Length: 427
Image (cartoon, rainbow, N blue to C red):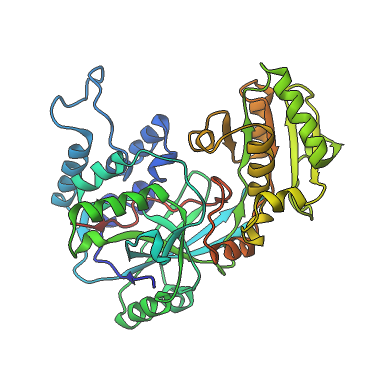
């Protein structure tokens, strides 16, 4: 059972900082140095200052010779609290979030979410689960930041098998508490909801739900490590999440395409890959602007582009016999998943990429758009691009009901949930 509760948040005083738009930022893991500088130019109070604290560089005239970036983040938060930029709620609340966005395919949507604190559970309990396998990531950075600030700064984006949005919707008819537009043009509107009856109803509605981590697996693993490190019962047993129902009409899922390297310099390996693909798949030449298989029916349909032929192909799996043998015992929803088909038959089978290679991205990379994937092959950065279809939400739900996790980067949930709406105290 999921334990979802309101939180006594630490949040910005928008009258002091000007607007949520000035201080909200994308999650730390999608921000580069230039993006960080742009965000701080908007406001010295921007959340990026503490969620992505700048490493100390002796060549930087502004560096501080003592301490470390995590301690600096903690001092910054304390100074913001002292001058009134950050305030602590005396009473618990949940925070309702709407995101109006234009998707990568050009369609328009509104996604709904509820920010709350969720009890940190081990995956074995089934209450909170990863929806796909994750690449090993550096947890120490996030753990050090949590230790220093005693806060969850960036929410984990999770999908819920129960939808609590109808319970909060009546309370979001008025003006929002804050509004922010991200660099992709997504308009985020936030309402603070403190009505005790609504808070109880939300917790009860989600008590029987299973939560699937869509974005923020490393943050969740950090929360587990911090909980175990502190021990006992207390705020360290909860973490900040933004919860969206799997049935939410604004929930969309997009694909992540695969890029392979190490073939151009090894003609024999390229010939083996090409011959194997012809045995497993029906292949037809298509125009480059038709390489995207989105909307195509069938099992195991991909676009293919390589640096040798510079020709777009449409691949379609001939039959599922070999696939079913290799994935024997796996649920059917998993065996019909494009990323699982590609990983099993092509990456591991034909290309000889091991699980360890996949974990550490050796000879394998990902692209979120078709143009980006093709451009990287044309530039010689990679040798082969496989273009995937998106995973239907129904298939995500079906796999979530099993014990299987999808291969890494099977899904791409858009848009991101911004950092800086609320911070959750954990100490």
